Image (tube, rainbow, N blue to C red; front, side):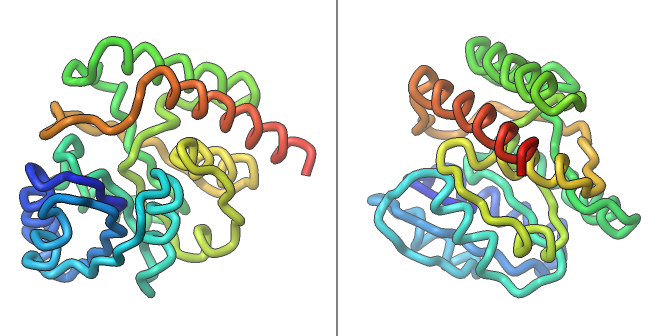
Length: 215
């Protein structure tokens, strides 16, 4: 996970991960915080890679590539994602899927601000049209990947990395499964400007879809 000033939630998230994995998960946080987030993460046994804030994609890309494990899972550190469902993701990967992507919108995502929810439906519609494949939630932060997938693709986006991490595997023929998850209200303040961030994500979706279509 990429972490930035999430001291209100990071401890809870890491405790939940430890509980559902019996402490067997290797947790990596790429952090640019000015609060106690990195200290709390270390207290919970996480590996913390400190770097100046450079955006979502830069942090998450570094976190994904750090651990040497056959399955890599991403999640946000704001306690919005249900770590109790993590075993379901791992089971689906073990069944043969290459990517398992958490679908926040399946159950309605009532805890998500209405503007963000509308935007995420729009992102999914845009990506679906451009790919010719129906997707439901392009920007979810909770996914599981086979390690060879994340190593074999050159990831280019920053704010729009979450969409890219779904689109490129889908258009390259990997076996991708969207899996319904319960989305919760975040702890702490959001760091993403919904207008500017939304525009960057939409731009990324168009760029990545066109690149994959014509590669």
